[in-house]
Length: 111
Picture (cartoon, rainbow, N blue to C red):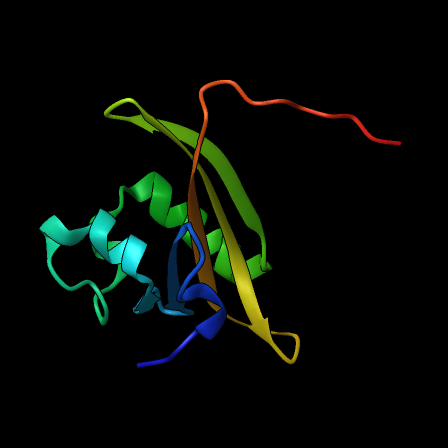
């Protein structure tokens, strides 16, 4: 199993997959989020996503792109940030960072 020490103790759920969509790593918060599905490490993201989501995953893996959005589930709002991760400029897979956010939050425009 690959390790991603930077993600072990952040207060966000972090999931990392390879270029085939196989989950390589989940920090404790991510594992707790998806605990009802069992151990997902080694399983493929494509198996548990809709065709629309699979296409977005394929696009990010092909282009090194990013996808960001917010969700609300059981009264908890989260920001989801998905982006390609690279080593030496080569796309190695995707990382998803999911963080809880308040219902109202400030937005600043800086110059």
